[in-house]
Amino acid sequence: MLLTAMATGCAASAADQDDAGEPPRLRVAAAGSLALAAPLSGLNDSAALADHLSGVETTPVTTPDEFKSLLTSSRVDLAALPTITAANLYNREVGISLVGVVDADLLKVLAPEGSSGWQALRGQTVYIPFQGDAGDITFRSLATENGLTPGEDFEISYTRSIPELMTAVATGTARHALLPEHFATLARQQAPAGQDGLTELLDVQEEWGRATGAGSLPQSAIVVRSGFAEEHPGLVERLRTYFADNTAGLADGDVDSARTEELAEATGTDAALVTRLLPTLNLGFSAPGPARNDITTLLTEAADLAPQSVGGRLPEGQFYGE
Image (cartoon, rainbow, N blue to C red):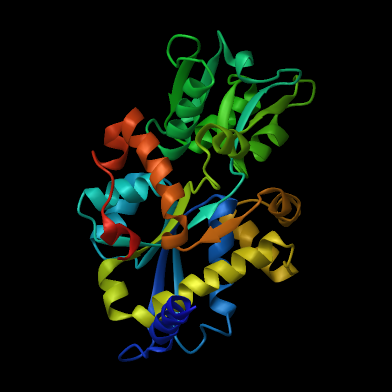
């Protein structure tokens, strides 16, 4: 009880701390998936943050190198990106720490309708965006756990971008593919009439829990630039609370038309698709401390399978804001 009260008091004092000077303008870099856009939505309209921010500026990002460039040059203060990419940047001495991680039913393994289970991939070519990225690592780890050796039991073909893979899926070139939502649904929708349909072959979130025993799959992270966190510790705590509350509300279906339109614009899709997909994503947001075991599970798997993906080692305590 005493420890809980002390921890609560510390968190409250950090959140109540007044940051020096005028409220800053928050500069955000974000990958364009719905699962990452959702926690960040509504920042400009938040009553809880109104007195602590002078505005929000968002830069869409598509590659890990873009994140590194923006963060190292101090052109952004906050970034929403894959957790494995965040660990890699930290280990490459980019000054960042976790604000929190996002768990979501994000990755979709697509296969022709009628396919079932991991064995449906045997002898096939699976198309994946970004070699060594979070999706690639997660998928290969799970395939190995389920008795398939990538490169032997099935081939992997990497694409240079998500739009390139969406086109391959839509045109029928890629009949087995790994895509995050909302891109997986868009690719299936864009397929021409008469083309045999694709189905979601595997529930990656469920498969990960079964294989690792982890309670979540924290594939995505929100990080803050270290210099910004040192200058505005109270604001960082408020943002962490905002992301947690916002994600919970969206997961419960608390979405008005303005928020839906904002998410549609951020992801380059339409409001109808946002409305349909949000309830299916099983969104959750956790602070670094409570999620540390699950984060470590993910990063350990990545380090074992492809050490360079996390920068050669597991990140230290500072990565978790300690």
